[in-house]
Image (tube, rainbow, N blue to C red; front, side, top):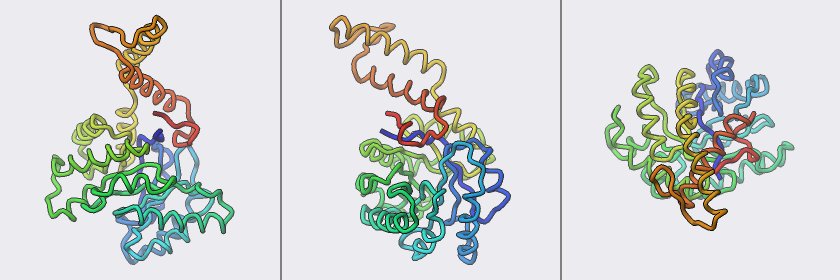
Length: 302
């Protein structure tokens, strides 16, 4: 079961104006960023701004997240101490390279939750797999803790670690994207596509997002509010897909009532896997249309 997280919007924690506008973007998750968008000399101010902002932000049905600095950076302890408050629902965890990193951060979160009166397990973990080592360990990262809600591939850091060029076409990270999608599916968590840096290139973003969806991603990180609406639209089942899924479900159920294991629909065989895929699509549509908090465990979808 994977959470419905279509659009995840990054907002620099030191940009007050961006934070104020973020809730109106329509994203399923807002992530206040303390890592790449905050310079080293501004980390302390960023922590305080994120802590102060969360209780004040208008809640419009999104999940509240903060991307902290990596465990390896030596900054994560101060980050977590500042931002683990009742309003926090998830952390983005950069440089997730193995299960042990996830488990150590899980321990930190458990301690902070218990000492602050926050329900144990409330704060989920969204790891970023962005190194060769992390890619090799993708499945164990996704299964390292019950807190892991979804996983992403970090294209910029991964190509730097691999010593390859990061191109607009993105061929160099196609394998990594497929690995993360597969690992997340096997672990039963959401697969979340990497960012598209050129937010002014709407057509390039659209094409790349369609490709990501075609290989199995369930959502995508956005670096600009203008990207959110398109991601929500592309990750919503189309009218044609919905109509066909309903026909599949109806035909298969009628067939099984007659004792058939497979039926023919428009000249195509419909068996159990096809039926289950159609059900999954319809459940996803229901979650999109009916959930005020689409990430909530009660709104999980297949």
